[in-house]
Image 1: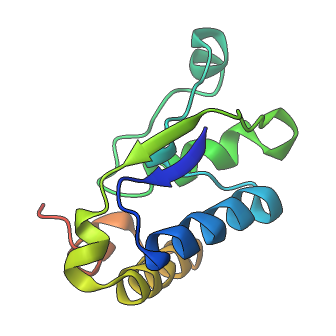
Image 2: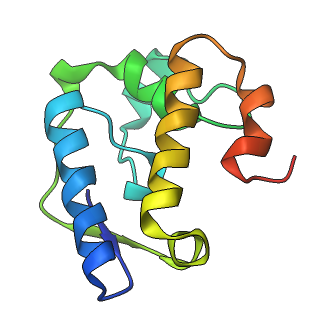
Length: 118
C-alpha cells in the first residue's frame, strides 16, 4: 500500500514523498504501510521473526524486491509520533535505527533509541 499520514501539514506531505521514494528505490516498505502477504508466501518464508523491532524490514528482505508489488490504495497512519518529536527529528531517528540494524546491531539494543518501550 501507499503510505499516508492523517495530518495535512507540509511536513506530512514531505514524509509521504520520502517514503514513496524509499519504497520505489530501496524496495523497503514498512509495516505501517500494511504489508499484504499471501498465506502461502508467508509460510514459505517462515513468517515474522520474534524480534522487537524491524520485523517488517526483515520479512521484506526475505520476500525480495522481485516479489514486491506496490498497491495504489493508501494505508493511512497516525502522525502523532511525528508531530511529537518533529517530522525531521523522527525521520532521522528512524534512519539511524535502520542503519544500525543493517550494520548488525541486534533489534533489542535499538528499541530504546527508536522510542518503543520494551
